[in-house]
Length: 187
Image 1 (cartoon, one colour):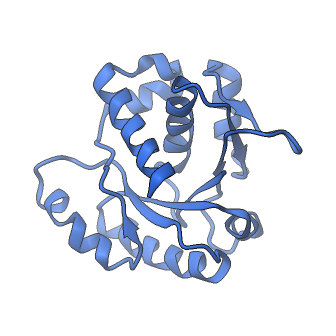
Image 2 (cartoon, rainbow, N blue to C red):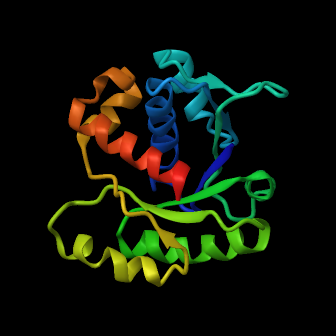
Image 3 (cartoon, rainbow, N blue to C red):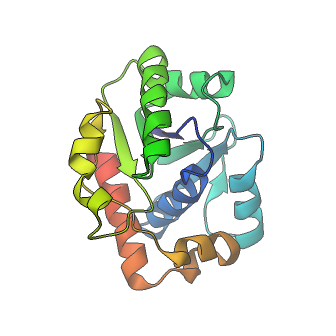
């Protein structure tokens, strides 16, 4: 299964969530690889430096899931090709208006290049019990994609994990990521 993480804006959390959701699946006994299409190669470097059990995707290898981290450019041929090959597309967005505006543009690109019906929004960096958090269903409806029930909270440990690996997450953070991964696989 190819799962593409995208947004036309940098800083939405595509790479962090690609890596962490991949780790959650590895932790659950799956063979998972990251296909790093972002020219910055952050996901690849993270795998090389933290050794989290994730693999860097190798052509013609079979994995239970291949997670594709895409560049933050809507005009990127790397993004377009990844969308054409996707089994699932996850638009990562924070609830901030700037991310939502770019997310609307990203949805247009998804619709242009992805022919499947398994595209959804995963809200990231959500501060619980705030006005924006309470408005997520309405904000998500503006994007005209399925909105995943699971949201990723704003936690410092997610940033720590990019430095220290999967083990930097406490049990609550791991469970939040695992539940999001399960929803992505089953929606």
